[in-house]
Image (cartoon, rainbow, N blue to C red; front, side):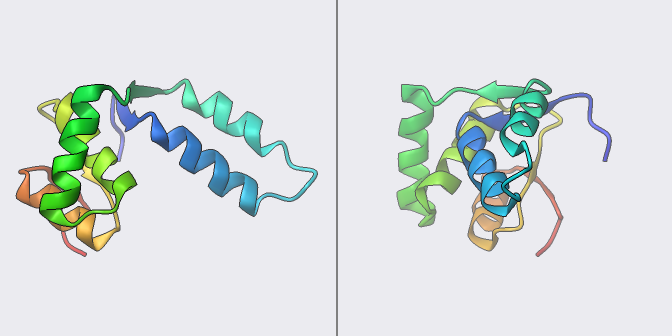
Length: 107
């Protein structure tokens, strides 16, 4: 899918760096890849309103903390053409209930 804009929560930097470093060989410069690619994303900062919405979503939808932050970030940014991509069942269901378009449409 070709999008003009990619949007993510600030916490994605931590999650992605960790995942890439865990899977990288010692000779790989995995951290540099994250830094270079990060520039292509618009970032939703973890502000007080985002954190408060995430806390409410975590409780209401029984989401894990980081999933709730991702969903709150998407809802806070709320561009009209937002498509939330997730393969996590709980996050997928919660995002659908919030009216998000989803990728994939069903899991």
